[in-house]
Image 1 (cartoon, rainbow, N blue to C red):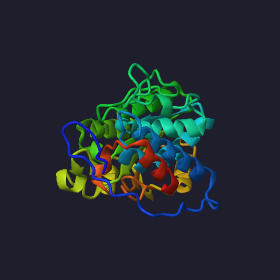
Image 2 (cartoon, rainbow, N blue to C red):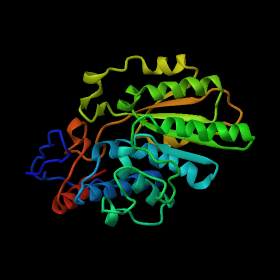
Image 3 (cartoon, helix red, strand yellow):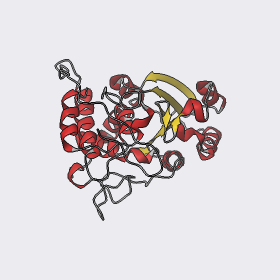
Image 4 (tube, rainbow, N blue to C red):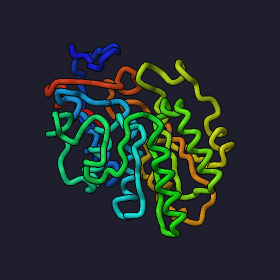
Length: 285
C-alpha cells in the first residue's frame, strides 16, 4: 500500500493494482495523442522522490495542450499557469508541444534544478513565475493590456483553478480587465471541484459562476474541459478587435484519465513508486 505525501495533510490510500486493459488510441486526434503522452510524463514525475501535484495536473492537461498549441505557432500569445502548483502538467504539456526542449522527468524536483514544483522564468518557455495563487491572472492581463496599448497583436491566457477563485486578486484582475476593455485576455477556469484541503463545494462554494463573470463584463463560455479540440477552437480566433475579455469555464475531473484517482480530492498531491507508475502508464487514457 502506498500513500501520498505532503506535509500537513492525509495521504491518498491507493488500491492494489487493478486488472485493466490498455485503451485503444487509434481514434485519437493529434492533440489527444499529445495529452496522453503528457499524462504519462506526469505519472513519471509522481514517481520522483518529491512526488507531484498529480490530480490538478491531469485535470488541467487538455486545457494546457489546447492553449499551448496556440502559442506554439503564435509568438504573440502567452499562456500563464496561474495554478502554479500544477507545474508537472505544464512541463509535460510544453515538452510534448515542442516548446520545451529539455525532458523534465529526469530532473523534476531535483535539488538546484529549475524543474521545481512551481514554474519560474529559468524554465525555457516560462515568462512569469507562479506559485502563490491569484498571481497568474494579473500577469496575463498585464501582457494582454501592454500589447493592446502598444498597438501590437497579442493574446494573454491565464489558466486558473476553481479553488484559486477564492483569491481576491482574481476578481480585482477581472474588474480591471473589463474596465480597460481588454478583449485579448482569456481566463480559463479548470473547474475540477477540488483543492488542497478538500472539495471546493465544502470549503467555499461558487454558485452561478458564469453569471458572476458576466457581471464583471466578460464574455462567457462553458465547455467540457477534456474536449481538447473544442478548447482549441475557443483559443484560435483573433481577439484583437474584441472589447470584452473571455472567461472559459472548463468542467474537468481531478485526476482525469487515471481511473484509480479520478474524481478523488485526495489525489491533489501524490507520490508513488516506479512499479506503480509503470502500471498506471499502461492504463491512463
